[in-house]
Length: 79
Image 1: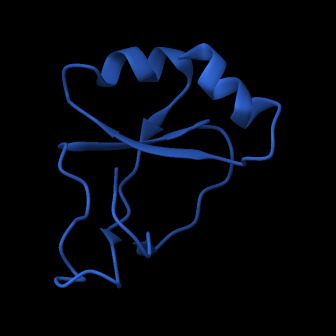
Image 2: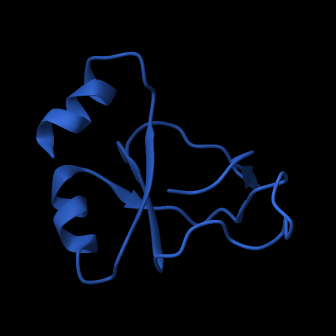
């Protein structure tokens, strides 16, 4: 997991947005991730207002970086 997060720390990506479970949430928090409270949608889906993620927790990494307020439109499926 640390190698994947290194692409955010030292690579072209500003953030990582991902889904997980409540059970695994503490693991990601120890790595420096935090919960995302924004509403997440997929405007290209048949049900655009429906949450495109299937897991109950959405997180972002790294927690200290600035994060936008308001809705987040994935404009595609949430994997």
